[in-house]
Image (cartoon, rainbow, N blue to C red; front, side, top):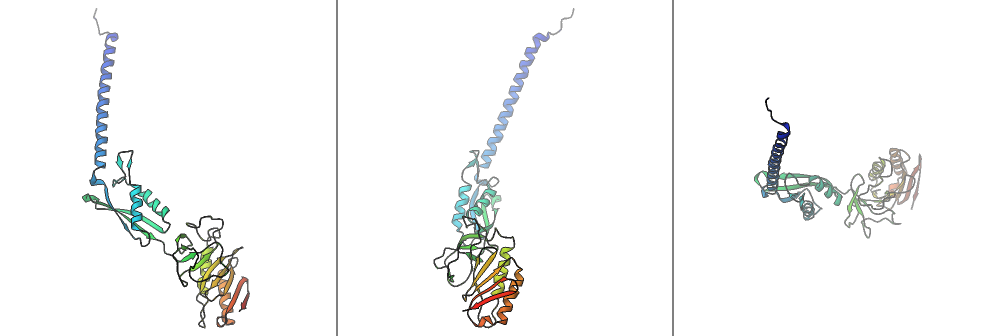
Length: 291
């Protein structure tokens, strides 16, 4: 009778050898992965792959040193305690761009570019564009007498779409049309939009009106707009440099109001005399009062 191998005797030995093989493979794989990880860490931390300097371009008002300091703050430290945030492949690009626009409302666009990284002298360029002031917002309520220049008023710059983005410098004369009101329930005006709670084209229509009346200068006098004041019920008041107050409403066609204004100014020769007010809020009927 042939005596074969006993499965009861060989199975424990076979299982032990399998376990030993698996352990050896696991050790080899683990050591290999550790070597790869350490190699990646070492390479990622080499100066060759680090941002060496930060250059800022396109700014005229926002201080270069402030932007560089913000970038330095956001690129300080490491990811997972080992990968430096200054690495040219890992630096937090979107976080930098978002933080710059959040901290400085004056910045309209921002983009990053890397230069020199192929030769181990990586320079990060932050290229920005800043908003251009077109108007100044000077408060929720207009003073009884609106004067040219900022005087004691603390105003905010507004761009062409009514975005309030920075404190305005003191100015004399009438370089900017002043804006009053128009923020609704907004508590913090910085970063808000003028007339945002009104119809989407409200600001554009109001600007069309003040631009049109500013061109009426037939006899040497001018209705140059000094301020635009938002009143209740979609009504507006324009204060001119000559002291005249002009009332209009967006509840009626703005071009019709412009035509009515020009017609009464020409027909009544209102540029010849001081005007207290012209009221365009009642359709075809135009009311005015001379001083």
